[in-house]
Image 1 (spheres, rainbow, N blue to C red):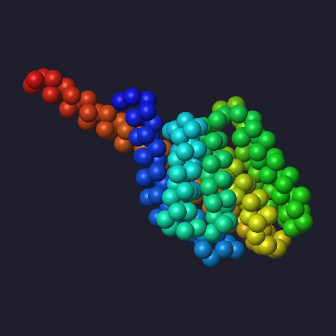
Image 2: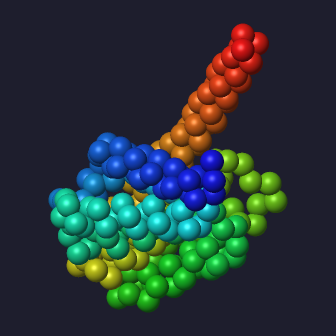
Image 3: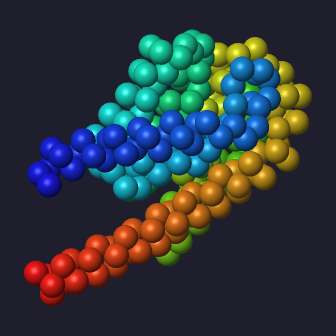
Length: 218
């Protein structure tokens, strides 16, 4: 398989996984009746775990383009779902300070700069989690997943704050919801990665056994 064929395979596989994940609606986004959290919040960031930076960008862009073209989409939805997922995917793919440290810091500043956000600044304390994880000497798969999902949360929250009318009370009401929601997403990422690794190992064993038996009888 050539590099181009491998790239096309990863793009098609990523698109298929994202559309399947998006079918599993998990929770209504508070403050919006037409937007849902779905398994896409778990699978989407993992595109960056397996693919290169271009694969991440192309897969998520194509997915959003198809939704815009054939399924219809609100003006807010592309920014509130695509960009946060892209940033979380880049967390997995690009281990640098810009994504893992400066981005959550910038989100905290942008949130508190908003008049409503300034009255609900406690909400931004959640985004200290990826900042602290950045300084961990030994990071586990779960801590990486936790940091990625909180970066996704930070970017999405800032976009929501500036695009949708809200109140400080709304943000305070979300505080107990966020931690449960993000722990579920992070745990889901770990489970998906482990399942894929087990399935890949199983398929390799089957392929190897088939190849050996074929060469023996051939």
